Length: 301
Image 1 (spheres, rainbow, N blue to C red):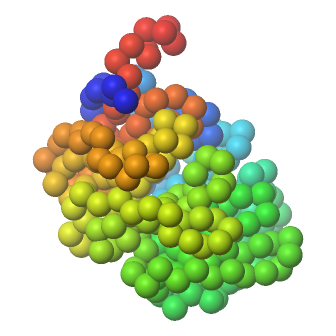
Image 2: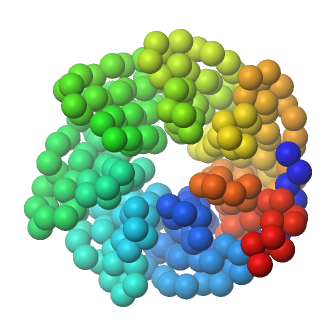
């Protein structure tokens, strides 16, 4: 997969904790240790808006399905629901007893799902004025590190080494124990598999239905960082950040390393594959690095 460095954006918000594309990939969000979220045009590097209102570091954010709203998660124990155009908080949701580490919308963007250091997953009905969580899942024994939210499932990963799948329709919980702290979780595009980044420096591909371990990917450095991973190129490649300032790509089926991108000198900890194109965003220290196919811009123009 021929991708090159295209652009470097200095976010000027302390350390960038996470980088996320919006639903169609036309904008991206950076979450900062300066307690702010910034909205960018990743193709031009233009800063479009800054959202300030949290009292501590922002750890994650997500854009709604029509890109009109943002939800953000912060170590200040709150979730904020923002109006994109005005830049103002619409609602501030407090209910977690610990810092909020991850946040996702459901498909209609009517429910926000948050995971916290208090070991719980909370569901918030953000279209009403109800400020309490409509449902709280308390099964985890340690910090919630990542969430995958689909039409009728909420899947969480935890430092307790387990992946929990909550089937909302059936009211059932399935728990798969990996036995190693899980630091990040994503789902393949076809919904068949889960990719779990673990603290032992191994990324594990797990069958969504059976919980069976299908493959393992190694070669990146984790050290003590939370390093995110992703699935790219129509579910054929795995990509992960690394502590030595690189991003590593593996063949999903073969499990072999196919490419090592030298992104910078600092830890590459967060990444976001474009929802439809080939571009990938990487976060390192204060910067977002945009990588992609070199000719894609000309084609789009």
